[in-house]
Amino acid sequence: MNTERPHSPFDPVTIGPVTLRNRFIKSGANEAMCLDGRPTRALVKHHRDLAAGGVGMTTVAYMSVAEEGRTLPNQIWMRPEVLPDLRVLTAAVHNEGAAISAQITHGGSFVTGMKVRGRTISASSGFNAAGMLKGNFLQRAMTEADMTRVIDEFVAGAELARDAGFDAVELHMGHGYLLNQFISPMSNRRSDEYGGSAENRVRFPARVLAAVRQAVGDQVAVLAKINVADGPSRGATVEDAIVTARALQAAGAHMLVLSGGRNVESTWFMFGSNMNRERISQVLKSQGEWLTALMMKAAASSERKMTFREMYFLDYSRKIRAAVDLPLAFLGGVKSLANAEQAVREGFECVVLARALIHDPALVNKFRSGELRESGCDNCNACVAYIYHPAGTWCIHNPPNDPALNRIPAAAESGR
Ligand SMILES: Cc1cc2nc3c(=O)[nH]c(=O)nc-3n(C[C@H](O)[C@H](O)[C@H](O)COP(=O)(O)O)c2cc1C
Image 1 (tube, rainbow, N blue to C red):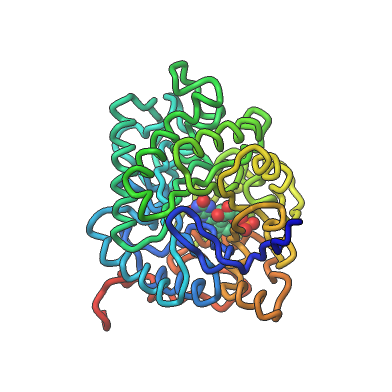
Image 2: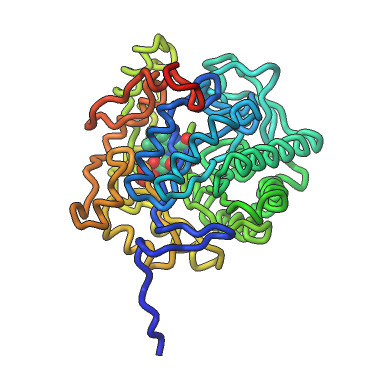
């Protein structure tokens, strides 16, 4: 007879070399709390609040492994100069008893907010719709030499994260960024061993993961965020995602975070709901980004209409759960304690939340104490607009962020 008690989301869990105090993870969600690629005090406060609020691990979003890998200027650019700031950030989270993960990534051709010298890199060459606004009109297919360089950049990023005190690195392979530009047939039109079948399309991302795992995998957990599907019918399917998951397991991933959708073609799939284009264009206009605001509004007319459902990736994620045996983290529309309990009961080792924790960083403690059973987040998606705001990402139902904190580097001497 199996007398083992079913796991609770509040139970500790071991992922590779790291043990988390519970299974709740804050999802990497662009904080917009950087100055010239350097973390600010606002970023430290943001993650400290999440740690104090009870999460097992918080994820610092979009840490670019290369200068030209950023999509926006207010994202972290990983280089030795930011090590002191990163150390302040990881220490603040550890002091509150939580672990901290670095989402390391490269945008490839998805560079919306800055001009890159020359053509952006991607799986394939051609016109780059995502780069239009800042003049990144063309992209070029990566050569073997580019691949070696990008692998080295990811390894250097992972080593920097380890040296800064991070407990995990999460390689971003979803949402349309560089590694996803290989995995998705929407952006990979190669005819060599890196294109065509799903096995071929994951070959380069798996090489990156294997190199990172070899370099730091004994010291930090190595995770990858993947798409369960892209959404549009011409995109990657859940069957492709199973191939991806198996390849990443073979490459040594300690856990996969299961997301979906692409920034250009299918944000409706990523968020299980439509973007708040009104709010995005309002914030962009307030920052003088009139053209971007106009384009965002125009994009809304062609978007698929979605009604939000809790746990909106569940059917896809279950199929991946049944196909692989490495740890998996469930993500997408987790709004209640019952959702988290169901995910763990269905065999997902961790539960990852973005919007519910942006709304209330203390949600996990409130679930634990019984004060709340449901998040107060109403999926208005207004928070997404504030990735373009100088005070940083914010839930409009909360008191505003202090913009002054977002003008001081994390490791600046007190009083500056
Ligand atoms: C304001 C905001 C910014 C986001 N930025 C990122 C990001 O930088 N990297 C990433 O992987 N996902 C990003 N996401 C997506 C979330 O990580 C998550 O996949 C998505 O919101 C679905 O989870 P949820 O239903 O718990 O919000 C962002 C989400 C929000 C709301």
